[in-house]
Image 1 (tube, helix red, strand yellow):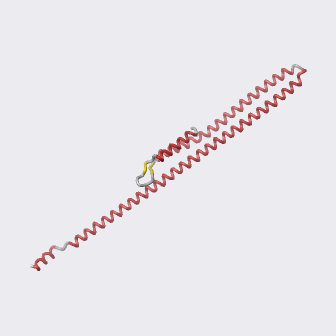
Image 2 (image 1 turned 120 degrees about the vertical axis):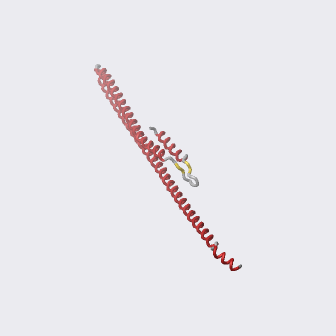
Image 3 (image 1 turned 135 degrees about the horizontal axis):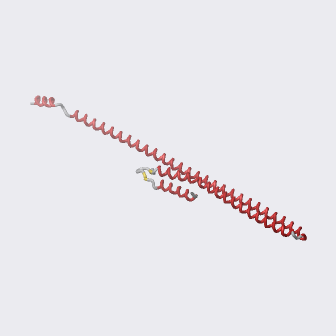
Length: 205
């Protein structure tokens, strides 16, 4: 998986948070935690692929070095054949030896330069790939930790809201029952017994 794919997964995770269902009367949102965890798992499993790409680049650099060695060997063989041909002529023996030595030194110098350059480029590519992979992993872990922390905080606040609502309903219920009991007691005190009312009527009569 490429670096762009990992960034796409991070964008997808961000969109899931942004499109979460809002909780009424609060700044909270509700997201599908299973989908969030699935995206995080995909991000973690994709990171080792970046390291594999670095290894592939190193192998490619080794192939370049191998081709350089083959080229050097071919040049040496050609130089040797050329020198042997010139050695057949005694008057040019010294010139041939000097030319062969010169070619050999140039070839060795060129091969060494190619090998050194290829090694440096391979090391730079490997370190850049590893640093990029580490940076992506740290960013993904930090983002995931932030998302999960916010979700935990939101769930705690929602739980507190529910508890406060239950407590408020219990208080309203208790106040309502107390008011009904007080009203019933007042009605009983205001209504006099029937016999007392009859006795009062006879006395007046």
